Image (cartoon, rainbow, N blue to C red; front, side):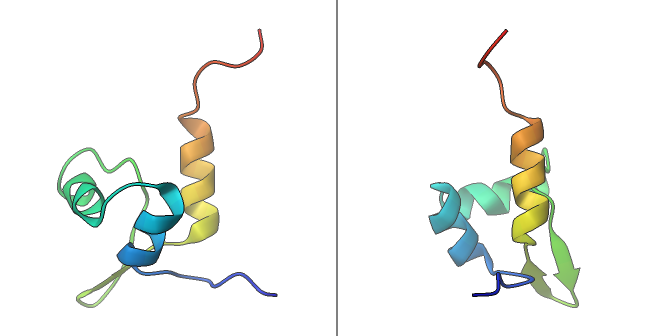
Length: 62
C-alpha cells in the first residue's frame, strides 16, 4: 500500500503520540516538525516528519 504524500494534523498527532494542540503550538513556536501549507490548509509529509524526528533522536549506542 502506498504511503500518503501528505496527512492532516489529526492523523499525524495520532501517529506520533502527541496532541493536535502540541502540533499547533509547534507551528507557532519552535517548528520541530516540518509543515506544508497549501493556502489555509496545513499538512505534513510523513517522510519529512520521520527524518526530522530521527535527527532529534538522543541516546542509543556509543
